[in-house]
Amino acid sequence: MFGFINIYKEKGMTSHDVVACLRRITGIRRIGHAGTLDPAAQGVLPVAIGNAARLIEYLTDEKAYIAKLHLGATSTTCDIEGEIVEKNPRIVTKEEFLDVLSNFRGEIEQIPPLYSAVHYKGKRLYEIARSGEIPEDIPSRIVRVDKIKLRAFDGRDAEIEIECSKGTYIRSIIRDIGEKLNTGAYMSELLRTQSGLFFSENAVMLQNLKTKEDVEKNLSDIYKVLPYRKYSLSYEEIQRVSNGLALNNILDYSEGETVLADADGRLAAVLRKSGTQLKVVKMFPNEDVEICRK
Image 1 (cartoon, rainbow, N blue to C red):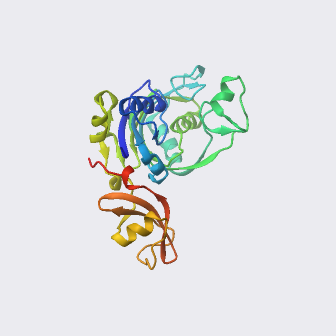
Image 2: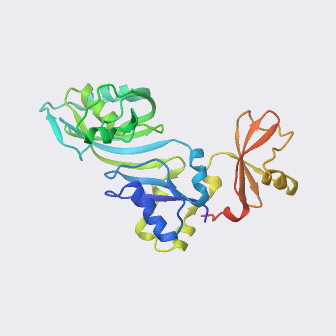
């Protein structure tokens, strides 16, 4: 079995729980997910089955979320799961909230939450936090927010819609909104509606997958979730690619462009343009790559 399945992860499950469940259903060990979702979050979780795990790095990184937040308090984890450590009775207006929200568009600098999987001096931040340490020099990162829009607001609770780059912590955005409003804030709910070319309206619930056949029939078309041009190989080119050899005199691609090599309806290799050649980056032997189209 080879491909991606768009899972709707429910609250209370870890991303690893989803992988473990699919391993039990399919009997396939090589399964991986793209883009971790916290246990309290729900929504789109792309999962790679079999050798498709080697393609996770080629998925696009656009993410979209709908998040709910509570104003007037802070949390140790920046969400509802943490301990409330500070409260502020001040009520902000919708106009104040919108004015602050405008600061979180485009490229922004953010510090990951203390309870996160980011590596810090050889350890995960959450491991350090659980030991009682609070690092004061967590490195910041630059992330991109393409869209941030207010959906609902009542002075204490708000709902926002965000489209952003990979690596953006929504909890950090909400924490920083609370800081700018001088009230504090924490995330009370999170729904991921998009991850790359996977969308919530097409996601399947784990509870609806009972057999290996159920998983197989819900695999997405590889060419629809990997946003790269396809090159159809001739018989002679299949032989070259299967031996790891480059295709010569290929001009109709940009330098460094990633190309998917197709052999009779199956993914045979990932290629990359270099000079006048398409060089083999990864190969997918015939027996591993029969694509189940949704």
